[in-house]
Length: 254
Image (cartoon, rainbow, N blue to C red; front, side):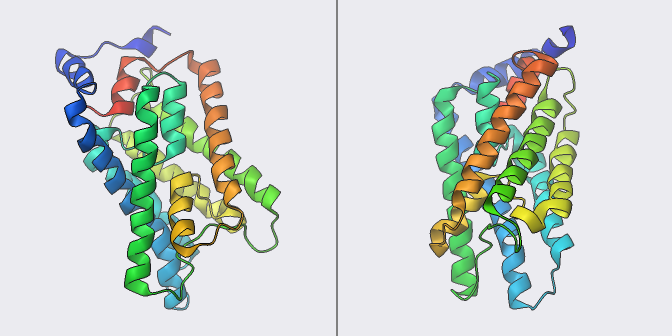
């Protein structure tokens, strides 16, 4: 447990303290909105282009693209806001006490705005004849099955994020590979069941712009339950909180 609380350098302590400086809040919220915009643009855009081109994208590419985008976003703006990009991740960090609860509403609103703007962009570029990447249970699968898969997938995703950010296992830039790789892995085996959203904001944006909220509860309740379960698992494995290094990873240091 000693490794959970590895000391930060003076510069890192200064950067973490700077997170409480409200003059930087808009920058962090802007980073979350922009990052989520890019993620949803790819995640929802892939099925839109696949539909319009009669299958030229394919399922493997459609689930790989958002994972690679997650890697890129974490690498280029993780220091700005922590690059949560997902309300489930934000809530999990708060549950683990690595992120202040008072910051949670702003992050979730920013993520939802970014996702909605991405779906709106797809609508403006490609017109109203597409489903805008709305996440729904796959053909032949029930809503209960999709809910179970979204819960389990998010349990895994948030566990990876929390583990990679903990003081004992903080792997720096490789955390981007861990998170992005998991997104790809989850999509490869489970996207036919639920769409492998694992992210309420990713599902909310296309639902709002298309007006199609079919089964939306799945993509709200499943990821939230998965985040809670992952936080509980993290507590059992590593104790409360991930240490100062985890707080720095959750909050960003820029």
